[in-house]
Length: 180
Image (tube, rainbow, N blue to C red; front, side, top):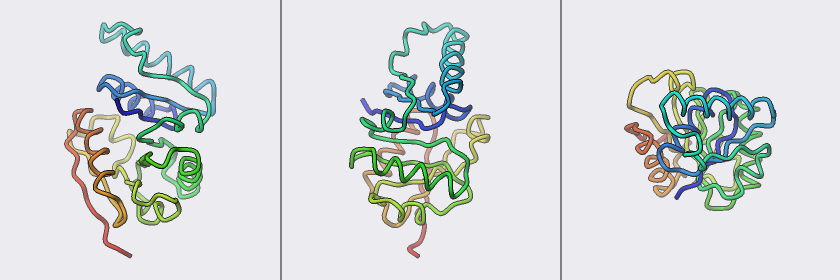
C-alpha cells in the first residue's frame, strides 16, 4: 500500500485525504493548526456518515501535527499550501530534508515552474506539479488532471503520481516542460 502524506488540512487537503483513503492509500494528513486537524477529522467523519459508510472503515487516515510525522514513511507527498513561491519553497525544503529519499513530491501549482521548484531540492527527479487550481479540483472540474514534469522528473515518479490519480478516478495527462 502506498503511503500518501498530505500537507495542509484545508478543503483541498480534506478532499484529497478522503479520496486517497477510499482508493486504498494509507493517508497522513498534516496541519500545524490543531483546529484545522480537528475540523478535517470531523468533516471526513461526517462525509463517511453521509455516504452511509462506517467512519471506522477509514483507519487508513491518520491526523498528524508535524511535517516530519507526515512524511517519515511517505511514498508520495502532496502539499496544499498557497500557490506562492515562498510557501512552496518552504514546504518543499522541509519535505526534501525530512522524507526518505524514495518520497515523491507533488505540488499543485498553476503559477510556478516545477523545474525551478525541483531545482531547489536534492531530488529533482522526484518532483512533479499538479497543474490545476485547488478550487477547480475540489469542485469536480472533470475527470482529467494535468501533471507537469520537469526535464529531470523520472519516469518512475510520473508513473507513481499517474497511478495515484487514476485510483482517484482521474485521467492524468503528463506534460513535460522543456529544459531551461
